[in-house]
Image 1 (cartoon, rainbow, N blue to C red):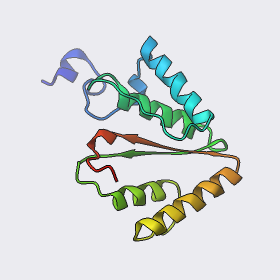
Image 2: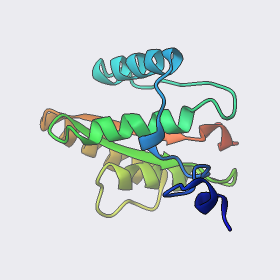
Image 3: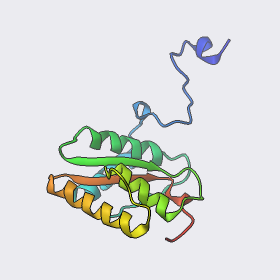
Image 4: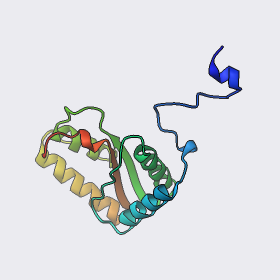
Length: 144
């Protein structure tokens, strides 16, 4: 008998995948949410959230993405999760371009940066704010 059956649970309570339904908004999480939303709404450019492993950074990022996605007229939002440390700068830029809606990302850095810049201008002209949340950015090994 599984523990789900034993305890009468409808689903597994302990998952490695973030599920915003189980987000507990502690005082620290509420403050982080306010600060991050302020940075997004005032277009700060780059904002970094730091915290120990297991403190809820990923779940908070997914909660913010959910919040932004509920206002498609105001935000163009996406989440990029870094899953290993062998990410190249071109791969990273290509994923950002794709997440921002660039149809055919270029093959080199110059083309990618031009496409991202043009897409950001298009999003801005539509009256939206572009947001790319990067989870596990600490996995990026290169300064490039």
